[in-house]
Length: 424
Ligand code: FE2
Image (cartoon, rainbow, N blue to C red; front, side, top):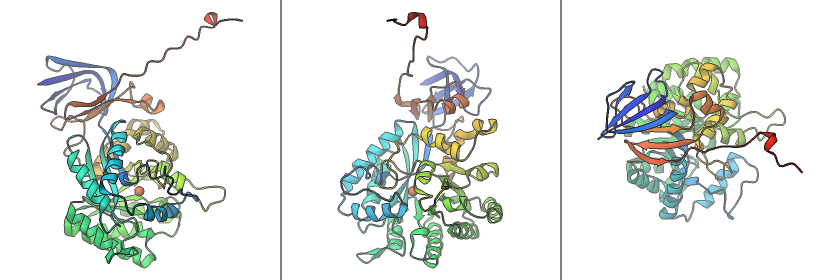
């Protein structure tokens, strides 16, 4: 059964306004396409590939709204300490219920692809098991990659005779898709570097992707990103490696950054920045001026180094707000990274679509292209500029040719003719 969508403004297809879907795949994108019995008029709305949230902690969802504890300092490290107690005693079903609600939230805004950072520093691997089960149950509607993320460290954590490193390996054997890490939370620089070497070794051994929480501090001397990039490059693994956060790289000396940019290009490493979380968490030891806390996103964009934005947190111990709407993340991100030239506006949606798909290695199944699965979203906007300026709503999300949801565009009507005003 073929469906034809007409009167569409299709992202990065300037000369096309129609597309046909057959058997859940894009058959053709163009103009004046063949007549088919089912025609859907998109009335000039913008069509994008689905949003990709390439960095989200599903297991932390709404942990910030409980009576158990609150993060008084607003810092990363207090949140980690509180979570360490919080997670004990959480059942797999509780974890799964919260994760499922988080997925429903983000999907309601047009996200169909999630890289789920999932804490594995738990001897029972409760979160990892819950995330893997959900990934498999929901795969037809949402694509989820599970990162084995040792929140409390690979070598600085040991409980019930299991180290963080051992638990990462166990999670990979259970089916996690990516090796995670957090070298800046290990007890010393030496141990942090050791963890980076082990992350790359495990990824190569088990044929997994890498996504490391790397230098999520304001420390101008932090160098775990340099070590990760070098180690990945040495193994020919740069294009399978993502460095998340890398906040300190936004604070380093410019001559050092210049040298590193060349090495990032050489390795093919990817970056994820979480603008709302890091502008909130970082700069906590600064007096004024307070640093923005985000990495060099604009430099990455200008130098063709792949970078995507992620939501990171939804009402958790790290960040008390967030709703999973990637439009909100993009809005904050392009302000903080100062990405507002005409060319930027034309490409900014890449930061929450194609760039995330690229680092998740989804190129073969993602994008608005004939032959690929018919996954796309529709925004209530006539073009990318208006969509960004108005933070336009996602009014439909389509997966394999079928609606995940469809909303009526909001109607706004106000009479501004003062002659109609009731006068006293
Ligand atoms: Fe994170």
